[in-house]
Length: 176
Image (cartoon, rainbow, N blue to C red):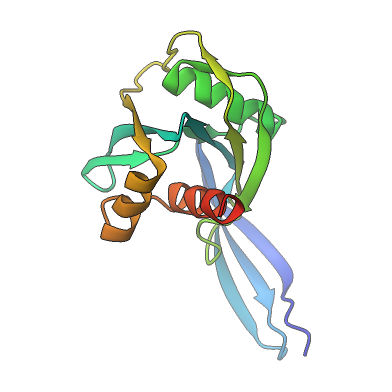
């Protein structure tokens, strides 16, 4: 069975700095019509930086959850920006470490039910400290934790950030 849906029309409901919201009219595989609420996002880049067996995590207050959370360094892709360059940029901005090199680890679709966002995750294990360069209005603390401790925090529910969970899992599976 063909599972694809065909867009008939689209209207923009909101066009902001980070997201654009559209409502699409579609035809389903059975020929019936439906609507899709679509959050359009330029995507993001993140980096799992492991130094001497320790993972670099940033702890920051996330307004929508009303609390501080741990996550790997990450940020929004600028229009036309290369994901690898963005991941390395975010590493330096948020942790102060400049990557000697990075390699692709995994791409994730954080919420495929309503957004087209893709987060491109890279891995770094060689970097030099160059100084943190936080964006205006960005407040966070960088900490290093042993990989095993991060895995325990994921298992116990202390770390719930999807990109961090996926990056650590992928790293652990590659390094069994």
